[in-house]
Length: 165
Image: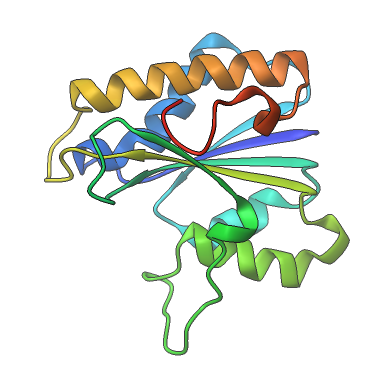
């Protein structure tokens, strides 16, 4: 496998479910050979075991930064890694912790290229379904990801900066 795309988030918290919703969209489109899709849900520790042996890792999740809902942020994986803090339990262990632990644990089996896409959420209250702004951003990102993995180009070469894809 050369590329792994993991969508993280909680489908029962509206826009927080953008990562798993994107994965379902990509499954429906049919990923090209060499691309694996995974619903990371809310279990950060599972991410550690999913990522081994991928050459390229893409993580998609929701964010709450105060930006315009639907804004897409692109981050290099190293900038998103968060070493686990003392006292973190399995319920607090997120994908950003998983990246730091994975780099330490997997060594040469850790992906060479890690990119994180965060989509600014509008509504993370309990409920199902994405807000229109977040759904539109998810559709744009799904299209961009499918183009890039099909063409084999570097994601950072094909995007228009850190935000606003």
